[in-house]
Image (cartoon, rainbow, N blue to C red):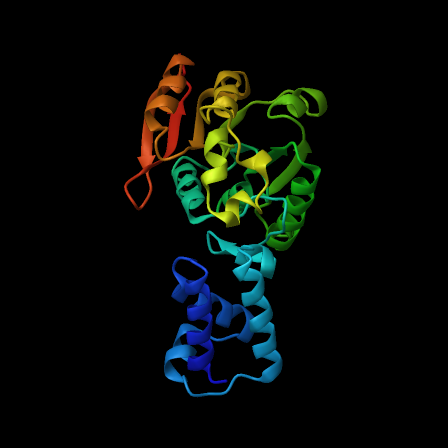
Length: 292
């Protein structure tokens, strides 16, 4: 099979299964399984693909037709220009969450302390520390499996920085939101609290795409009846863990901007604003704890 024939075969198979943007997925599969760039695909369409690689591609496509996410199939995914290990049972890093990281980076200065609640794979906190100087971070998650993956990602991505002149200190704690901070860490406050919490209303989960509904952990998706259960808890307890003037930044659902902004204001936060993603939908709400 040639490169072009293989690409078209992948597109046809994925399209017939109702998978959106099958052309993009075909390009990813050819890149990950065959090492082919977009330039290779368009510049050498008649080149043959080795039989063993073609067989691997077929295996990937069969799994994808069962709606298994490509991220879990390949065990890695790019986020903020970094390569993160991913595995079933832990939320997959998504481009929407890069909006959250970029928002925090505007407020992040050298030497700050960052708390990442519901850290999952660690992609948010690790990215922030990777692209900052001498910052410290604590990631908290209720899942021991997620924390093991976060630690693995931290070792792979930040490990090379440990002997550098500018250290990046990171640690992960297991527990329910702020709980482990009072149990295992000397009382400290943070300059920034960030979180991509569960925010999908429980009744909506069954309507999601099979890739999300059937494969990703419900614990990381289910935000209660209105999607705001965990968000309320994070906001209500945040002032006790922030310095005066500290920032709270949360990823939210596209229709939750007004509600979450109100919750922040009610909790005493100032300069509250909703930030849109590239589609123009509310994606992040941030607020500042007043100095006075």
